[in-house]
Amino acid sequence: MDENNWLRSMSNELYLWYDEIEDQDPASFDDSLSYFEQLKTFALTSSGSAKDRFHFTAPTEKWLSEMEVGYGLQWGLLSAPDELPRRAVVAYLDNERNDDDNNLPDTVTRGAKIVSVDGVEFDYGDDVDTLNNALWPTTAGESHTFEILPLGATDPVEVTLVAKVVESDPVQHVKVETTNSGRKVGYMLFNDHLARAESQLISEVKLLVSENIDDLVLDLRYNSGGYLGLASELAYMIAGDASEGQAFEHIRFNDKYPEIHPFKGEPITPTPFYTTALGIGDESLKGNPLPTLNLPRLFVLTGENTCSASEAIMNGLRGIDVEVIQIGGITCGKPYGFYPLDNCGTTYFTIQFAGSNAKGFGDYTDGFFPGGHFGTGADLPGCEVGDDFDHLLGDVNEARFAAALNYIESGDCGEITTSAFSESGVNDHRLEPSVRVPKDLFRSSRIMVE
Image (cartoon, rainbow, N blue to C red; front, top):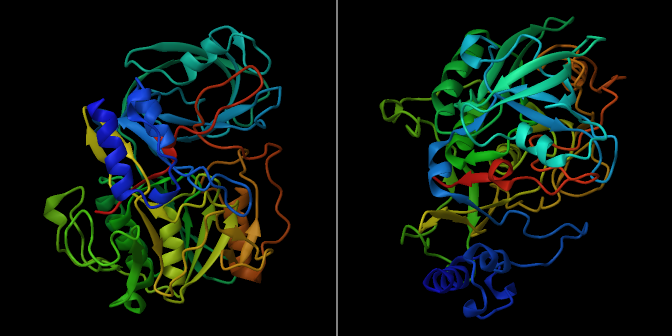
């Protein structure tokens, strides 16, 4: 009862749309998590999507650890929500090198297709509990037998995957390619705005600066968000001098806090383009000047898992007239954020503020759209290209990267052949005989202010 009362008071005070919550008696709920699910708006966006798709909880210990139990890979579920046969592949590895520390067989790479799990056929098998337990283990040391079809192979192989506590490598596959016209194009896969990503981003941008690149292709297709400060740092490192003194993001709380920040007790000020390191993951970095590429445009590879702080990079750069060219799929649509609040071992995430760029734009609740088809402020130049699981990430023949390279050379994406699989999401949790439930939002919508 005490926890329910705290949730009711907290939501009424801090929730961005507090006046859209239907007030219900806290005493009528004997489970605080169930009560929390009611403490949000149930309104819809113009496209018919839920206005608040980002209301979730996580065990505090799990949230703070930035680590999870897994195999060191992320699954891509490719079948439609109500479609059989099921189809799933390895979307990417949590660490760039598939070495002994990664504990994965060489055959387990992006594009490896699941055939069966612990003896249960994946495509049509009825024993969904066995599939779920194997795909998403909960205890380090668990082992499960997978039959997979490796990328490019014609015959399946059997592999045993052993779960462990995984510390992912957020920045991967940084490289430079030279186009036919001689332009030097940098590529960077950035998967998560975790604290430990700060030092990696700084190091890899320094490398790209030394290569004197002409363009950057930033692959955010699987980046579901995280620290907003990291998004600001990376945006500054891309834009350089053009961003100094400008606002990266303005934030707006509910009408109870028009001027004073509810968590800091200070006047609300914009998040700047940070020009020095914040020391989020390494205190020794704090205050060090950040390297800059000084690019007038950015190519971004996106998908439905591109969310939150990743979208803030795109929006923040557009606010200072850095051209953002979008290749891939529609992003998740989250111009909102929250301060995680812990109570009794559970961390609650409820939308507390909305963000907008230096020009005041933040209306992308249905995502950013590549190709400019809808005539809204969320339309970006570029083109729609499906996720290509027939090639490794960073491969110049991978459909989205290839489209970006073609755009750099010719001004359009060209004719791109993509995988036969369509994109339906990465690391979606829990299977049913013919449907999937929505994403585990712990993975898909993380953002912090500081």
